[in-house]
Image (cartoon, rainbow, N blue to C red; front, side):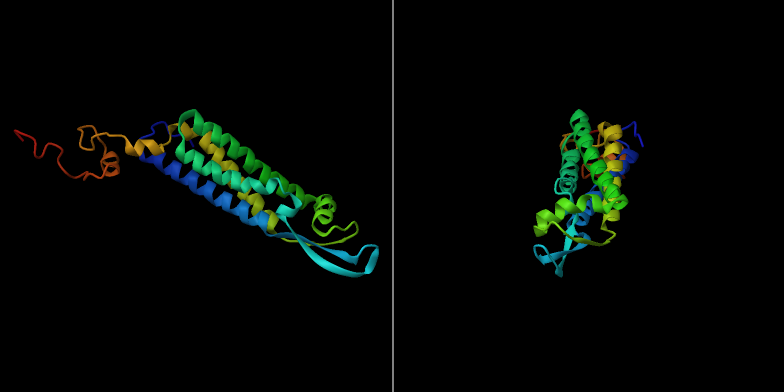
Length: 203
């Protein structure tokens, strides 16, 4: 997981892989918590169970606060790209907590869906009595998204200080210096096959 040299291709690959995992996990959290997790039948008239209507409850209806973890994770993605050193570590820690929160809540819902329905039915349908329907599988997508976010942010917290930073792309470093690697030359728009001494006086 760790890359000791920030200028190496391995560090760049791990950086891009972690960002891809974080982006995928954030998208999964956002989408999964917006989709229906469970349905319920509630009376049309208070106190009359003869006539009922069906309502669907999304993950964000059940867990309004936790549903924001996807957006927090997405913000962490931008923060990891924009920051470096300890700033990147702090941002990764925040993203790690968001990913763990999205994962744990989804798993707890799967273990006992009924524990969270009472409050959600009152808020969404303004009903006290209800009959719970079958739960969908979107909680699993949320759990997978949370796991991806937690993994990527833990990786960033451990190795992020050695990864490339946004600012390093714009440092004024000669691409044709004698000790420049092919990757450095390409990064600065140069041709790694070109002789750096070509065109110099006496060459």
